[in-house]
Length: 157
Image (cartoon, rainbow, N blue to C red):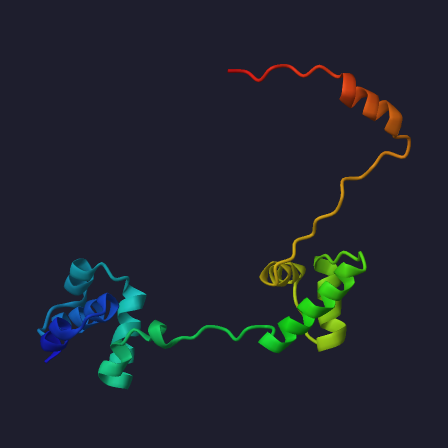
């Protein structure tokens, strides 16, 4: 029966687990099964316990049914964040990771790391871009004169 399940399975993980159990059912020793399948001893013991406790269901690959962790912000919350940032952007205010982090904490009551805040900025299409700093003693006239009269070297070939 286990070999039939093995041949019918389309999942490589399940096939390997079924192979282990089929070899054990044939009467092969654990050492021989470990040599054939290259499983570790703790993994083999865990697999045997799962098979005895749950039967064939214990050998299934459950990763396909795992939807992952829930998202930190719902679509509505992300939209609210985007609208708030866009409103401030039109007024010339620039948001950064710590500011997003603080807004989420105060407005939504959720804690997050600053790296996640930058992920949210990226998700809504914003990046922190500011003008290059300007030196306090910059001379506009001298810069314009330099730009007009400077000789630029020809690009290297």
